Length: 312
Image (tube, rainbow, N blue to C red; front, side, top):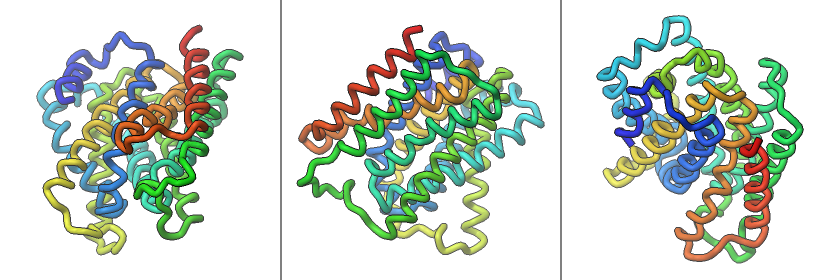
C-alpha cells in the first residue's frame, strides 16, 4: 500500500487510468474496510475509532509526502479549502458514518450512505453546472438502484450475525447515516476545484486527514464524553484500525481525489457508491454462506449500470 501511494505521489498523480476506474478502485477499498471497521468501531466508539484511524493514517502517510516533496503542489489558499473539505467530509462525515454503523450495522448503513451518489449528482449539477449524457444518467440510476436493492434485500430471514444486529436509537442511526452521505458529497464538492488544478492526491489526503485528527484531539482535550474510548484499546484492535485506515483512507480516499481531478463530482460519487455490492463476495467468504437472492438482483443492476457508464 505504501509503495502504491508513493508511486501516486512520485508521478504527480499521473496515473493512466480514467476517473471511472479510479472511483471503482476506491469503492473496492471501502468494501474491504467495511468488514474490518465495523467490529472495531463498536469496540472503541465512533469518535475514538475515527480519531485513532486518522492519527495512524497521518503517521503512515506524512513521511511519504515529506520525502517526495508532494507538499509543494499545494498552495496556501488551496490548503484551507482542503482542510474545510476534510472537516466536513471526514471529521463530521466519517464519524457520523461509524456512529450510524454502530446502531444499524454495516448493511443498513450502506443503504443510507449510498445516497451520497444522489447528493453528489445534485450538488454537482446545482453548484458546478455538471451535465451527464442520457446513457450516463441511465447507468447512474441503475447503479444507485442496484446498490440499494442489494443492501435492502441482501439479508436472510434467519440471519443472526452480530453485524446484522440493531443497537441503540434507530431513528438517530438513520439520521447519522444520511448526514454521513451528505457530508461525503459536500466534501467532494469542495475539494473538486482544488483537485482539478493538479494538486497531488496523497498530499491532499494527508492534509485532510491531519485536519480531522487535530479536530478530534481538540474535542478529546475539551473533555467531551463522546470522544473517549469506550473499551480499552488492544494491539490486535490497533492493528485492524491501522489496516482499515491505510486501505480505506490512505489508498481509497487518494483514489477518489485523483478521480475528482478528471471526472465530475456526480459520476465519481455514483461509481464510488458501488462498494456495498462489491462487499457481497467478501461477506460470502466471511460468513460462509451466500447472500440472499435479492442481493444478487441488485448486484446485477449495478453491473449493468456500471457498464453503461464506462462504455461511452
